[in-house]
Length: 413
Image (cartoon, one colour):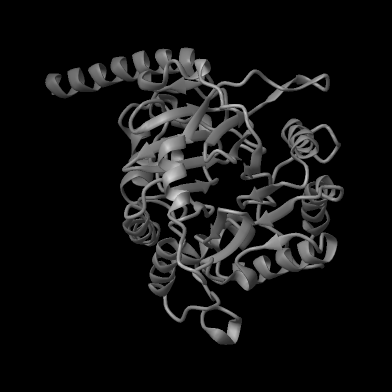
């Protein structure tokens, strides 16, 4: 009995110590030691081929015109001009996407989507919308109808925008952003969604089972080795945040604060049961969940075969970058919310802060990752940059681009 009490007391003291450390480091940018000198490196001066903004989880943006991320994004749009694109990485309307016309939440949902569409009306570049779990009514069985309503609404109110993959199909679909720059889009929610999901030619889909998209993706990547490729989906493949099974010490030690922010009642061990469930078994939106785990495993099996692929996602409400097995994995899900992200591990960079990532593709072959975070006011829409990195070196990329594919082997559709 005394041994058990001693273990509980020891665990409580250790958790409290971790809690104090986390309080000091929360919301501070983390950069891996190998990249500590990142600020000394700048892109080589030269013309840009294309600029790409990757913005996730905008679904809770302020609708009064004062949203800091949306205002920063509009500033970026004005700078980027027509030789640019924006990918909205899903979870576009919280909490449950676009409900039916008679639903009491319909007006609020439309308003949240309208402010996003309004931001792009004067934009000359491409706008690409993806869907996330919240757009499918948080994965509930009637989510497909919610997705179709949102897609129709975007096409009606911003006809030039792309909503990909169309009709809720799993994909993959491709979009040529610029010469030598290819976007490939997957509907990752399709694999974790409950209820009806479109499949087969009667729905306009190019695949007839859940495995075919990965075979098609492998074919697309193999046929386009001469291009710089960005694969986009809502769900991350690596994450140091909640959907990757990472929780704060506070959530372990003071679990009742989830219900009331001042309920600091220490419940060591008991408080760890919910985080343990999310890490080991998982809700439908977690990497640990069997459907998500299977989708992730199959997707990584393909991506790991192709060096220098960039995979971009949202879902977790923070900014994260991983360079792993010659691939580049981004989480850009803090468009309207922020949540805890654990530093270290496989991550090169993490930050619990609102903002988004951009990719800059240079004529020289360089590709740079940049962080955009809101500044303190209208006069300074962008805060000081907290991280940037050259993802594709000049030598390797130029050699890849020089090895042009055989005639007629352009992007698959």
